[in-house]
Length: 333
Image 1 (cartoon, rainbow, N blue to C red):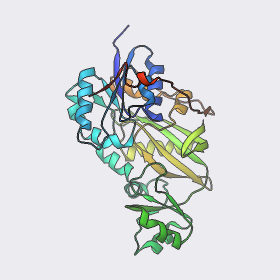
Image 2: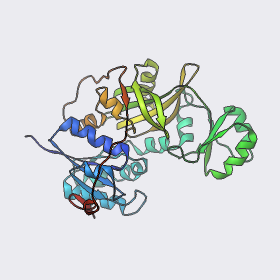
Image 3: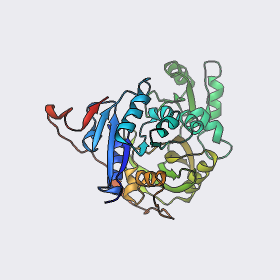
Image 4: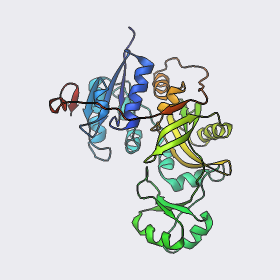
């Protein structure tokens, strides 16, 4: 057996994290040691990793020192972040991780800051790529902002993730009613067409290695439960151009809705997508290729996906006893 690759995967209590564990197992088999971390003691990925740690939340001062201590103790080669909240503190601490021999797979700070703020995303791209029309509203300019984006519209936080604090606006009265509930709001045009998630992968120099579009056939609470890969040339071109305009390192994804057959970017996430296993089943192991590239291991010259692969996602159970909750390979630092 060759060298064992040691990878730390974060956020293993959520689908992105434990999905990454599954992908890495498929890529490396028995030649990998996976250390899973999460802030929750009862996390699914703890029972899929070789060893696991409960860590502080990413906004706590102790988060980065704890992560570095784990990397040093476990001699981690690569850190693969799988939650939005961890991207900034990890990107700001890459040199510290490097001093203990660990490479963090994260895009540059400027890219993260642009992608996590929907207004900055719009201002960076609106003259270059098709992106949903957006405006910054307040009580004084709300009517003008609505005239710019047109009704119906969506009111949401500039830096929000998921479906929290998102309101559909059908009238000026709606806007005045809901804006008071949203700190730092942005208002965007409502687009009710077909929705896509597009998985992308950049190497450590920022070169785009692959773009995998997939249509969201069915969603539950904002997450794709049924999806299908599609060879959509427009979306592939957008993914490559995004990589040129905003430098990424490792996996990233963007979401698109169609209006009259034309795609409009809704949001960009500089991390693995929650449904990246759809691309995995279509032949593109985003997590596996990312780790290989980070460690200068061989990767395919051409990375392509199978068109028309439909993946139906479902919930599985992991059953433990009360005594097993913090037994075995789960630790706290």
